[in-house]
Image 1 (cartoon, rainbow, N blue to C red):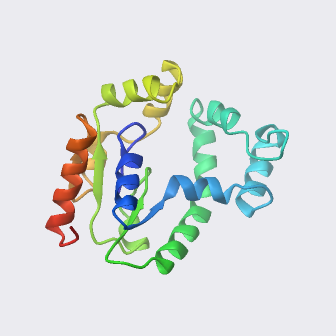
Image 2: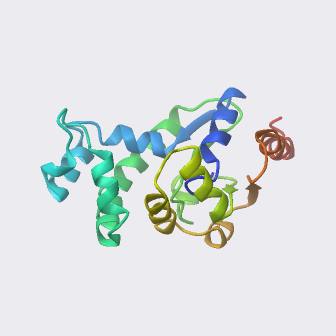
Length: 191
């Protein structure tokens, strides 16, 4: 499952989890791989310096976000360091998953992820940039400048649509979103 920030990917994964499906969220995995003293944490500290660490030695996410969402080369460096570790954790979680289906939420999905993770279908959770911006500013409390920078750092909907099998447009109510997910589950014999 792919989707940009503010599209509603987390809402869909939470719903699938409540429905009993295994859900592996790359954002959750990304937080786990940078816990203090793990290899990705050490690599980030080496690449960006101790300034990326909070007083408790955890990653200072606010500081790092301020750096990478305003400097493309820093974002590429961050992604280059973390993506391999994230991929390893996702593969291991997929091997442990049981049940009729497992869902992997990957915000920065690339076509090669199909093969890397042996994905049979790719769903895209999409919202217009205006709706995503309103969610980031309203519901998440980001300032508009930061929200726009985060949106600009990610692929657009046209690029996402080119790599998905099924689109889930999320610009209405949660009930409408859940109904579309249920429809896709039924189409795959998973309802």
